[in-house]
Length: 165
Image 1 (cartoon, helix red, strand yellow):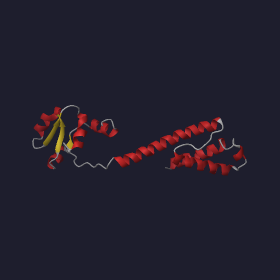
Image 2 (tube, helix red, strand yellow):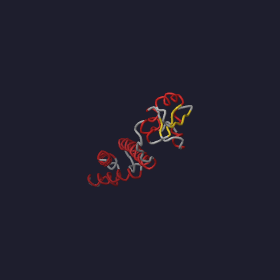
Image 3 (cartoon, helix red, strand yellow):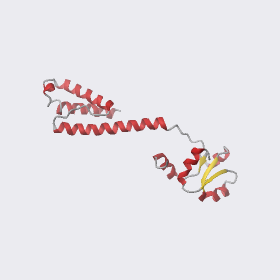
């Protein structure tokens, strides 16, 4: 937050020098008044999601464009973070091993490729065997077919990244 506030103040000072000096209405104002007015416009720009600077000169227009890109990144990051907090419920690991899942009598999703190995090593478990892509484990868990899954870490990373729907 300190960095964002610092960038906002820096942009306000930059625009006080570049932009407000070109405007006849603000040309006679003392520098500190221009700096406060520019800092205020920069602060309002953050909350409106767009730049409120005019950019009369070429350096001012370039600075305004850079500030708009900064605003785009900040607003998009904030919205994505807020959306993730609102959409994704807190998930805590209920089990940390296959033995814990068996002890809790969980139905365990396993791909058909490891069906024989799992029955051989853990004969007391209850399994839901699915064929096809291992990407389907999330669908089976969501439908309630199983309570846990034996799956590669890469698939979980892909699920968290949004590559698996």
